[in-house]
Amino acid sequence: MCRWYGEAEGHLRKTPAVVAPLDCHAVSLVFVSHIPAASALQRNLAYVEESVVEDEILIAARERATELGVPPVPPSVGALLSMYAQLLGARAVVEVGTGAGISGLWLLDGMREDGTLTTIDWEPEHQRAAKDAFRTADIAPARTRLIAGRALDVLPRLADDTYDLVFIDAAPLEQPQYVEQAVRLLREGGALLMYNALLGGRVPDPAQRDPATQAVRTATRMVAEDPDLTSVLIPVGDGLLCASRG
Picture 1: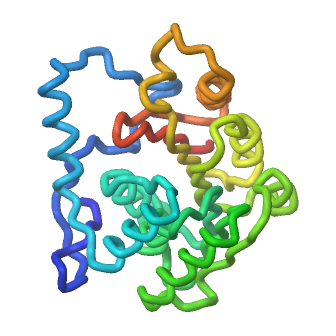
Picture 2 (picture 1 turned 90 degrees about the vertical axis):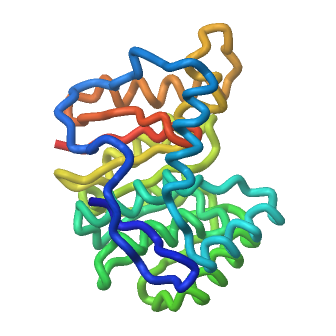
Picture 3 (picture 1 turned 30 degrees about the vertical axis):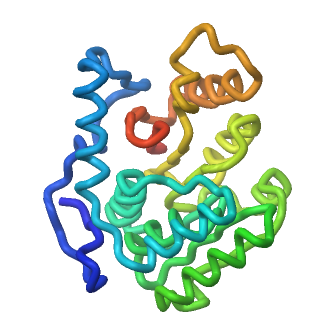
């Protein structure tokens, strides 16, 4: 079961998940071996997104993200973030890339009530938008720690082996460094989630060799080759790379 936002009244409802269970035993990245025709694939992906109903707070946050020019995670990815946080009983979560607070709202929904989300973004306007979204959602101030700064300057200051979940949704060029830091931060049994793992279809296309694409491939390979990580690449949104430590 997966926790999903309910209708416009804002209550939560439970409904059967429409994605495969994530606690698989793969020891390397699992890629789709058979892709249906493009039209069928598009219908499948559209169905997945439409199956997740967001409340008015998330809808407003998406509108704000559009105004700021910050691409938010789609509903399907948000639901996965919430489910992961809930399965882990997450109390300590790090988010690289605050955006307008959409992924943060989903993470907080799945986290324990006494949990704290540490979210990092170099753009103060993004963090102001996220603060507004958290306030509107009646998130207690003690449950969020917003840090304005460059993630590669902030992450090394965080303690080793203390975080339940690290979510990366930031500059593709820096994803290898983010992954390196995330593995250090995670406790045994913690989870690393990295968005934009497909980078608009460029990553699986061998003809694409621009720096950003190469960096994402490097980050993906780092996760796949780490003996302490169990990982899977889920083709929702722009690709969500999921890995558990230990």
